[in-house]
Image (cartoon, rainbow, N blue to C red; front, side, top):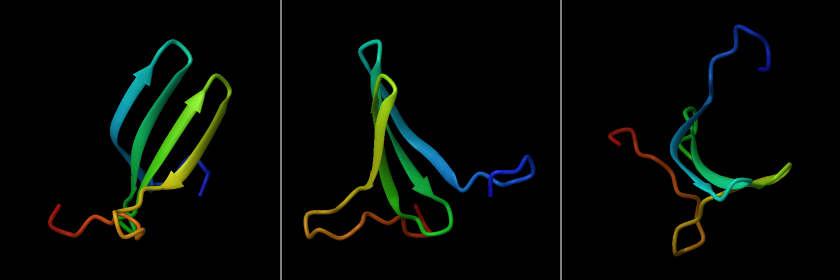
Length: 64
């Protein structure tokens, strides 16, 4: 998974820098289609799945 020959499983579909030390990215898992929000401030950060209004994970369909 982390070797030099690994394929990139996550694709960045949105990124935004917020100030000098912080920002966020929306990532899509190419295998499952699940969207994730990654945000950071300085050296701290976190990742969480994006949820729709019903509390279910946002998932790409094959035609998106």
